Length: 388
Image (cartoon, rainbow, N blue to C red):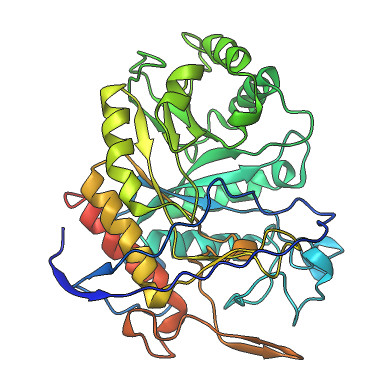
């Protein structure tokens, strides 16, 4: 772990407003109140200079102990016949987006193979070896967009896990049916992430696929435990992590571990969570995020956590590394609605909207700024997995 060079105070801004929702699948609800701003957030001394777009022939080694949450839900009229998600909450792309930042590549289609290939290269440049793809049920837009993503990920050496979202009608039984369905489609793909790790949920040492389950608190614990037990000892036995800041949430339902996702989580909670998971033989994956701002995507429950020039991201990473969990998850690569993205962003002036990019983060200049968070992620992955 790097030595501490100096301390940077960080202001965390919280806004709360009431109104109505959106017709498209909305950004996920938060699970905790934003923490009070710590007295200080520490920045590590070694601050790499972000590089221009990565050269595919010179990509660094990626770690499968670090997973980034990835969103496959964006669409454009040119490719998909209509805007998808960029126009949430009645925004009017391409100048007016449901986001507080503007993508360096512009508002894109998640189904564009060129975009997918570029995104996989960016993930590799950040040394991220696995993405957890947001998935909204069989036959959904995201489900229909997976084939080309698997091809792009395989070409770049990125592995894919699934982030099972709380779609309408989801039950404990449907969760297991979804796992079997996805393994039936992609179980033989070299891009599917499998890893060998026994837990209190399953003693299997065979390589198992990985699923993150976001909506587990809405499912009856006894039903979910029985459903997951039905997977154990079968060819579809999988590593299932439930979304929670407490290890007991996994033991209660017979899952294999927990992840936090929450961009507002206090870094101070990571050490206790990792210790509790270790004692319970569970996988712990605290989630690190650069900030949060959903003010352009929802009309109620507006919240903002300032990035503070990168200090917020560093504080979460620093706490995660110190906690020594099994894995770390990044919230997120491209959840633009909530401004948790690390995907390249750029300054942009469009009509009445002005978007600020990442300039100034970690001392970057305009030329390096779009990749500031990818470069910083690569630095922290190196601190978390120094032997890789």
